[in-house]
Length: 100
Image (cartoon, rainbow, N blue to C red; front, side, top):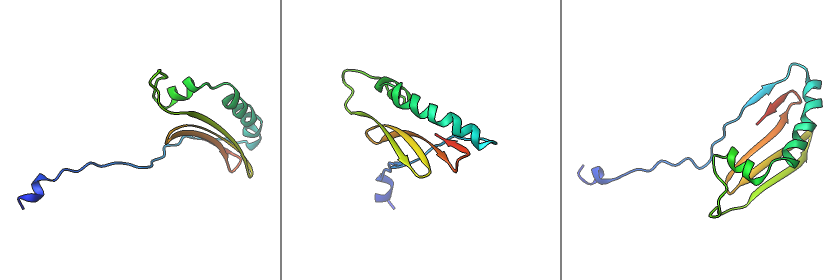
């Protein structure tokens, strides 16, 4: 029992996801809003904005690339902002849920 007391443990979560779902009672409301959200997320967010969303600051010592990825997928599209292994994404799910 003596050697076991000297062991230390470090717990790490390699991958986790936290999402927010907004349910639309009327799918047409999401269908009219979603293209504008995609356009805004694609054209208006800067690297500094994305880092702020991820809880980081843009500094001269910032090591990494901030990437924005827009992908058409059936039946809709999704936007993903990422830096290294951290990312934020938004997509429509089943035509009536906005997931981010």
